[in-house]
Image 1 (cartoon, rainbow, N blue to C red):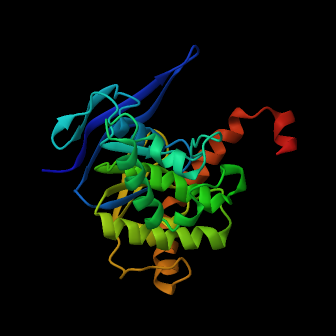
Image 2: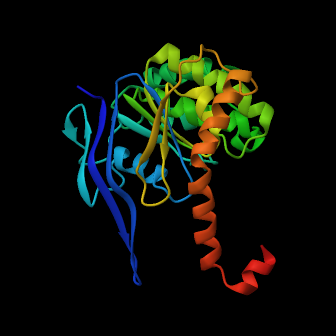
Image 3: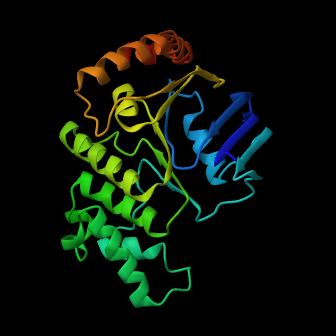
Length: 268
C-alpha cells in the first residue's frame, strides 16, 4: 500500500470574478519513507498539494489517501512546516518545541524529555532557554523542524522552508535534513523552486507543469548521499530538469505580465 496517493485530484479555487483550476486530474503515489520534492513554476499547485495532504484543503474532485484512507481532517500524523515557520515569539526555544506535545496528555517532564531529544538532534540543545529574537534564520528553521519531529508524525510536509536563507546556511541545513531523514525514516514531501535543492534532497523530483498542475516528469534521483549542491552530478542533472521546465516558466511569467497594468510593468 502506498503511504500517500493522489487519485484523479482536481482542485479549483473560486473567487468573486472567476474560477481558477490549480490542479487537474492529478495522480501521484508516494511510498513510506520516501523523500519526494515537488518542483514547478509559480502557481502550479505545489503548496496546494501539501495542504491537501495535511487536510487544510479538500479536493474539488478525486481523492487524497493516506495509508489507503481518504484524508478527512488535519492530524498530528501529518505535520507541515510553513515558509514563515509560525513559531511563537513569546516562547523560548524549548517552549516552542514542547508546545506541540501539550495536547497529547503527557506529563510535563516527559514532554520536556522528548523536546530535548529533538533539540539535540538538530544541534540546539545548548540554546533551549534562548529567546527567538536572539536566533539566526537557520537556527529558527531548526526549532521549527524539532517542533515538527517532536510529535512523531508519519509524514513531514515542508513548504520552501529554506528559501529565505543565505547559501551557506541553506547548504548546512540540506546536510542536516538528509541526516535527520535517514535517522528517522519519515516520509517527507518538500516543495521548492530550486532545482538543485530538489536534487540534493529528494529520492524523486516530481516536476509539475504550469497551472493547472499535472505531472510533467517524475525523476528518480540515484546519486549517492550525502549530496552537496555544488557537486558536478547535481549540476548536470539540474541542467536537464531546468531545460524541461523552461517552457512552463516562460508561460507563467508571460501570464503574470499580461495581468500587470502598463504602469506596473514600468516599475517591474
